[in-house]
Amino acid sequence: MQKEPGLLEKYIADIARALEGFSEHEADSKRVLDQLCASDPVKFFAAGIHVVAALEFSPASHYLVLLLAKDKRLSNWLLDTKLCTLKVAVAVARAAADARIQLQSTFEMALNKGLQRQASSANTDRILRILNLLEAIGSQSCWDSFQVELMAYPDKVVRSKAALLIGRSQKNTDWIVRRLLDRDPRVQANAVETLWGLDAAEAKPHLLEALKSKHNRVFANAALGLYRLGDPSVIHVLLEATRHEDPLFQISALWAIGQTQDPRFLPALSLQFKSAQGRLRLALAGAMSRIRQREKSRVQANQLQLAISQGVVEPDGRRRLTLAVSSRPAKNLVSLKPTEFLLWENETPVENYEVRPAAPAEVILAGFIAPWFEAAGDPTEKTWREGLDRCLLMKRKDDLWRIDRYAAAAPEVPTGETDSSDSMPYEDSALAPQFKAAQCWIAEPDQLRKLVSLAVPRARAANTALAAIQRQCKTMTHPHGRRHVFILLHGTAGLDQKSAVDLLPGLAQDQAVTFHGIAARAAGQWTLFREFCVSMPEGTFTEVDPAEIADGIAGAYASLCNRFEINYAAPAATNSGGREPRVKLRVESSRGNGQAEITLERPPETSAEIPAEAPPVAAEVPAA
Image 1: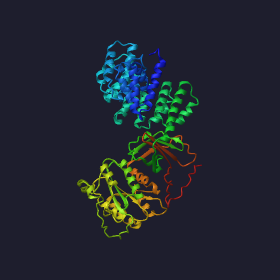
Image 2 (image 1 turned 90 degrees about the vertical axis):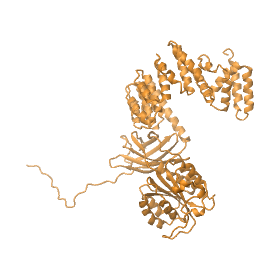
Image 3 (image 1 turned 180 degrees about the horizontal axis):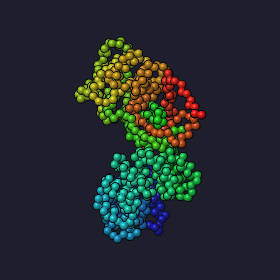
Image 4 (image 1 turned 45 degrees about the horizontal axis):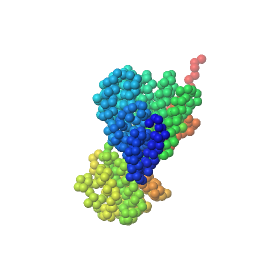
């Protein structure tokens, strides 16, 4: 093989060419590959290994790796350091696992033999290669058989690699914590890394303890683990470590910072880079490069919408923000981590802050009031349904919904008269008995999705929006939960504002209901109803362009499900320049990115009160 490199390269090129048109001409590609394999199995096997290693998994690579697996030498070839590099072997093993080719038993036999041999440099290299191959194929079941021998093996690198693989597969906190007491810092560091995959409540105490380690790798793994769990306090800890007296601590801290890809580190790193030299300068450059890679890719990520409803400076000087986060397509975002919220006040990064979900813990009863249209294809009907579909993606499991309709074009029913329309909002045939018994308050998303898509008979629609609100609120008999009603206002019909603001405050108080209005933008049209909604502690009123009604509905609902509160103290080095505190907030996560800005409101200044009848205070004159 080594004597004919040109021939091997030709086979590699022929195989790659056959795979290029696999998706369009599968039968032809398979025939060419079969012919190449039959013409010289040895050369085809050697060339095919390198082709598979260079490919992403696809139907083409799947077929090629199946051809290679027919040769019984595949496992031995991957184990042999002289036949292919570790990088190639790992890539092929991963592709074979994706194609459900069984290699684990062969690798386990090889590991068993290696552990029985006397320790040597060559044997250690072979064991490490086998561990990497077992990791590549996702082996989970073999570690109980080998953990004693692996953790007793004389070589530190083998023990540390074994600690990582066993800890990841078993997720046994007690076993991992015992490894944190190992005399070898490598084993400790890898044990800390396995904590990243555990539940936050289990992992955090041990990560905080490991953060005190005197070994740089243990410290860095603990800091990165805490960051990934969402602990923003570790940002300051990592920045301090970049100025540690031990250069190894500095470099490990910079590695962890680079892994976070958090742009808040950039100003401090850029300043330090100006005077750094040698390895520290290279580590700084590497960390900044990784962060800027994320900055470039941020534009391509899904967009999140951030709506900051409140930003205030508390009397004690602390800052408080209340915001809702929404996305398209809609998602439940309540699990966003605090470290995924990035804050700057007057261009100064905020390092120490707290983020907590502000959505109510109890069940939400969410009522929706929508106009009824005779034509199912009406544009407002379509955008209303789209908005509800997006809200369903954010809906929590136990929250209850009911959707009532009103005839937008119908004349108002005089105040005090009874609306004659049926109080059941859906077709009888669409409802199971248990839903009727619950007065059509439904939690199941599939049932709600079906009801959103169905046409509603005119008899099921109330004559006015106010009548629909009244009949819906009367059904709110669920003993627990926060009650919210979302009203889509259509044109000028369907709601007498004066009647609404006369009747709804009493209803809101009696039934503990909060109201949210959503309307197409029209200057001054909904002044009275807007004032009523926003006067409530959690009430909202949203006006959007007609084409953005679905966005308005999803954004209003997100204010319940995806609401957060952020608290922090003013940064010590904030660059106010006499300006009011201006906060820039970004959310950067795997589920999308978004940003918003707000100028914080200061508390009103209070002057000391002087009693009206206070006698004048005489200046004290010293005695002569």
